Amino acid sequence: MERARPSSGVLRVLDNQDLDEALALLDRNRVANVFVRSRISRAGLDPWLLGCQVVGWERDGELVSLAHLGSNLVAVDADAEALDAYVRYLGPHRRSASIMGVAEPTIALWEGLSQRWGGQWSSVRDMRPVQPLMAIRETPQVGVDERVRPITMADFDSYFEAAVAMYTEEVGVSPLESSGSYRRHVQRTIEEQRAFGIVEDGRVVYKSDVGCASGQVCQVQGVWMRPDLRGRGLAAGAMAGVVELCRARWGTVSLYVNDYNSVALKLYRRVGFEQEGTLATVLY
Image (cartoon, rainbow, N blue to C red):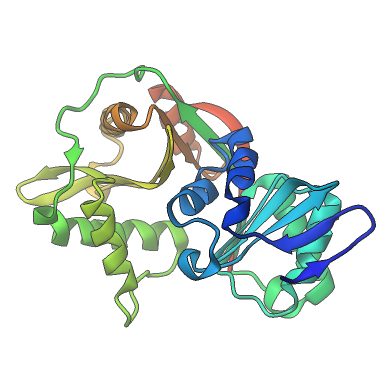
């Protein structure tokens, strides 16, 4: 097991013997940490099953921080010393497609990687430094659009088309590639009953899905309304419908949004979401 020993802590690769301690660390902020928690609660900490390493930062034998080193690089509860250890461990060759998580350590991690290694870490496609993290636990403050329902595989073609449109609009590039992985991702989301929408005449006109969930917390993403229906006041009721379906299954519904998206922020606040923190994302 690889180790590095700075002055006051130890960095090591975690395994399943560390699972309980890692989950306890993540449970300190279940809303902010739902992505990482959803991954390791399902697959554990075996890198072969999880698809990536999770490294931990220990002081006096206690796990005080961890970092998920997958396609999404996420540092959890990382102070300056832990971040420096992660920077040194990651090295100059970037394997991640993004750095994401609580804003301050996420930006500090990117800065540390860029300053130490440059190259693959410093050249970014997009930087989103302020993304309000919002959550709702109670009944929405607006009426529910009763047309919102779980999406089934019978809706797949139209839902997939809407998902591609949403992703392209939000990220700025198409998710389609030759391997078909995005198509399989959308199919898995539907099969796991994490996709919701409004379907009219066989066409999806509104969609959103649960990107990750663990315990009593889920995180909604991929919110999209067909362009010709926007601006008609339909989105609040649709989102309220999604909230109620998700609350029945998980209890707490969270999401995050770019700070410059004033229309979305106003919508989510109207529905009853309240800000609980700030995330950031660095896209490559």
